[in-house]
Length: 106
Image 1 (spheres, rainbow, N blue to C red):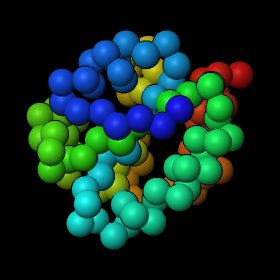
Image 2: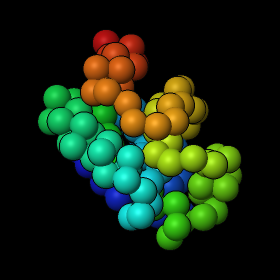
Image 3: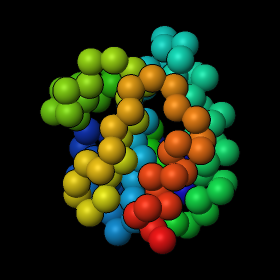
Image 4: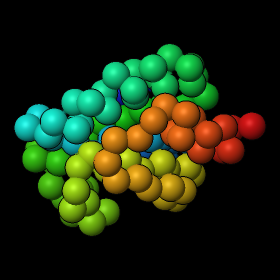
């Protein structure tokens, strides 16, 4: 499932999710963020209902970005049961991301 989250929804949609959630911290003006998008779309199709891909615009949601110390984008953070399991900075391959999801859902 592919969703958009805001500061006000982060707790319920990410931290309280019963599935692993990969949060893409991004911004409209970020070129590498646009390169990451099709990779996340592919990953979303492969995951099906095993996980969630969430996008959080750092310009529109500075509180959450600040809470997690996001200094560079894209930053991807994998959350599971309210915990940060893994973090990546920069564009990541589908294989790298899927391998981390597989560890949590297998």
